[in-house]
Image 1 (tube, one colour):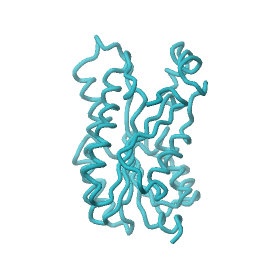
Image 2 (cartoon, one colour):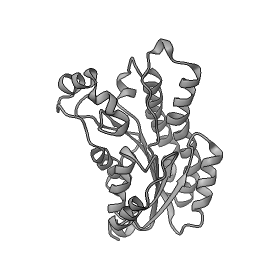
Image 3 (tube, rainbow, N blue to C red):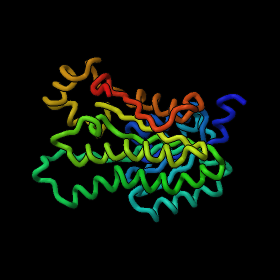
Image 4 (cartoon, rainbow, N blue to C red):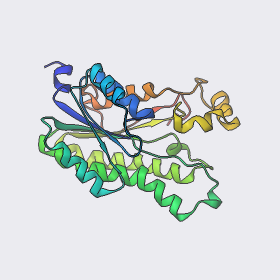
Length: 254
């Protein structure tokens, strides 16, 4: 069976899948013939975008408004997929938020909210999806971390903590899922050009990071992250689990 034929039978859930890196991942996976479930929180995808993804080759397309930090919301979204003829094969935990604020002025509410989305959301989605994969004896989870979780950051301490947690979560889940051939890996992007990072890229600190700290001397593009994610979902990475693939232009070489 060809890769395309196998992908046509596989459903991949992409959280935060309608903008930025998540949208680039969705476009890449559509071209590879997967059935896609795109979960969004606030911005409903335009009909033109959905038509584009189907025309790219997606076997099927399901969209749902989901709050990944709310277990009931995730349960409801998964229940809606039960009528689908496709087996849940992949999960891309991409949904996340960024806040830059001095550590001394962070509030408990801001800390909790960011970790709820970035870390707890990945935990909830993985915990609820893994039994579906276990039933089939096959699956691949890709969690999106960040170089911030590897390097730390003075203006986004809670963000760095959440993304470091995602890396640890990925390693732990790789061990949990291994007996059932569920692979769990992590992609850690560096400075990627998206709507969320425009402020940093245009700042003096961002310019300095590109010129002084990134050996390739440029920001990354969302499709470059999508390439890494699609590899880790594919059978080409069938002997890879518990790993963090860095897509950062050399910003962090761990």
